[in-house]
Length: 149
Image (cartoon, rainbow, N blue to C red; front, side):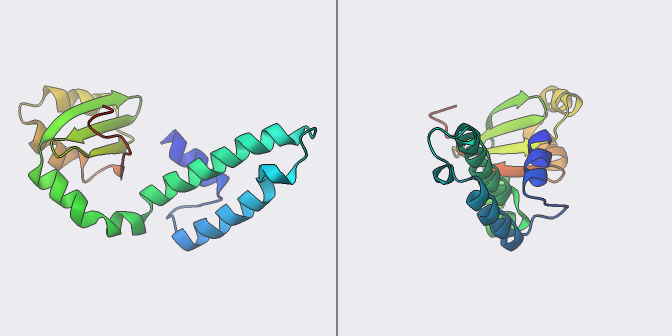
């Protein structure tokens, strides 16, 4: 959740993520912080390099959780959560990563330790996730694959 807030603040996004507005903000930030704008000896050159990486990462992250992106991929996501069981899961802070038997991995943001403990103590893991995790948390498809996990 901290990451989402940080990127929303960077792109001046208030509530819902609108891809058109996000793209406009992204372009303006890239123009402002592009490393090629600064000379090698310039003190801001290194800062611009770091800032441009943050802008690119933030843009891709926000696009991946935008309502339009979620809607476009809803059919594939629904197929995965309904027809593929959970192969593995990892909880780090407020992030829950679930890898499915079909090889896809999704990240769920804002999952508390208490919810995670209830999940792992559940005798029906898939059922718990379908009722508690999938409908209630912001998610995105992770770039991780089964080979990396």
